[in-house]
Image: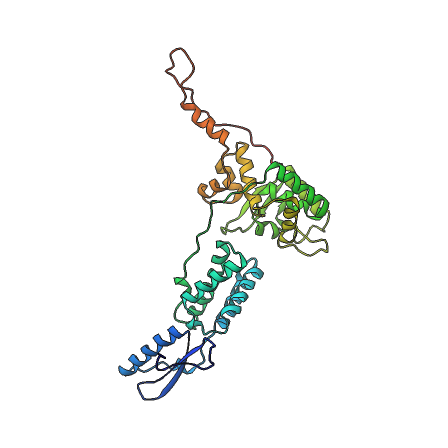
Length: 363
């Protein structure tokens, strides 16, 4: 049976309205969004009318749409974020989904259902879903601060569980095939690849690198700001230093380090790196995995976790352990200290000495 006082102004539009008489007997209409929202709002307004409660004057104003609060969020990310283009594009996608709806009519159930649907159709990873969720929440937080909305429905949207334990390194045979493809099909980008493998920088830090951050005398990179909002100082081995020499020969030594063949700043390796991986027959590998690869090779060469954490810019060793797996040979050597010493008495044990291999340049 049709709920009294609720209606669709345009049949089958999914946009429901309510019609009721307020405490003074004046007939009012309000846009409520979904049918369930309309029914709840209708009962609320009827209860307020019975109590003689005066309704706020803001009801006379047109409701604020999600497109309007998203516009404020886009301006915010363009002002504060280091890579605003990606965030703004995600917010515009959210506007395509919810832009025409009044911001306060959108429910957490609607948001979660749409994110789940898009994730399935677009094959999104949980981290990508959570990224869109966070940006939508940012739009509501800013709108709430400016008193355009009263609530933030995104707070009740579940957080998708991310698999942070995934670690993938480049096997020697894969490295050989990939280098062959890069040298034959994408030679311009070979220095980018070598630089990433030998510095372990995050993609955003690498492609925001400017020549004034390079210390040629001491072979160092000085990044004033990283993901954890702290400065990072990275020593360069010979492979990374040679990559910078090759890149320096292509520019005048000012501005961005990584440029396209037409002289435009590069912001990401995706458009050529994914093609190189496909042609090399390498699956389940990303540019970020080069950071895992960097840490794992350092660990295999005997570099302490504390030093690897400093190179990666980690605040805790727990994060570093995810990236730098210890090889099984090192673990066997560790437990071997418990074995009885092969003597006549068989009562003594060999003391355990941690491997002290010298830190080597990682090629």
